[in-house]
Length: 142
Image 1 (cartoon, rainbow, N blue to C red):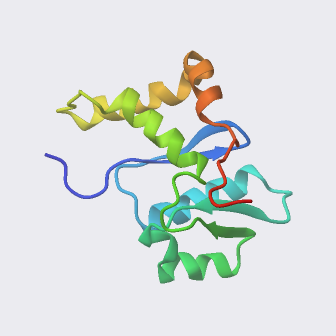
Image 2 (tube, one colour):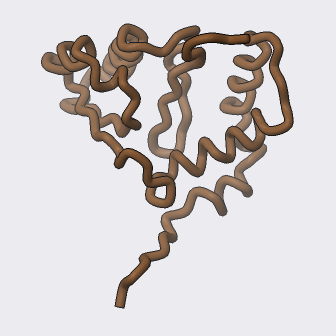
């Protein structure tokens, strides 16, 4: 059984997914390492805007101290608004393809399966095209 938060930071921007950081534990230190890699990848950018969820490590004092002298600006999503958040739809699709009905006894196999998913997104292009739209239903409008 795995304990703690194991995974990899996934950076999703402009329709392209890039795994900048392969790590075994996500925390404030690994988040700062990710930010450093993103800044190094975009050296001439005046500002880098990162839309993120409300995970605790984004709001930690260590991350805030780093961001004081960084070109990275965090934009936080509403605490939980899956209908407005395309990434929630993307993660639901990811979980459907990778998690549902499967058990990974070894973390390295789980991790390689996740990486394979992100490197072969073209296989899911048609499904993702219908899922990741900006056609939102406005409730209560006149």
